[in-house]
Length: 129
Image (cartoon, rainbow, N blue to C red):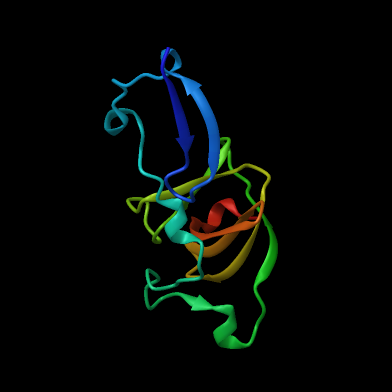
């Protein structure tokens, strides 16, 4: 029996020990896992917005909190840019509440809060009520 000590390589948290019979050393993560891009979108950054966007702060208006995701499916894609071809940061569940900071009347720049993290990105305005 061989034991391995487990540590989190990202933040150094200690997890404990595990017997080698429970570890798959042949696991290929490149084929089965997608990279987590959501951590790049935890700060307010409107650089992907086009010149047709207007942001409420620019016109002296506060952000609009309380917009509700109203999709026919189970979720709404939060995207890295205002385009259906942009990377999907995460899927926001139907019925979730978001804050809106700006729009071009087709896309909205929003924030979705999960626990203690805020995720910023773009969502199709037709699915926000």
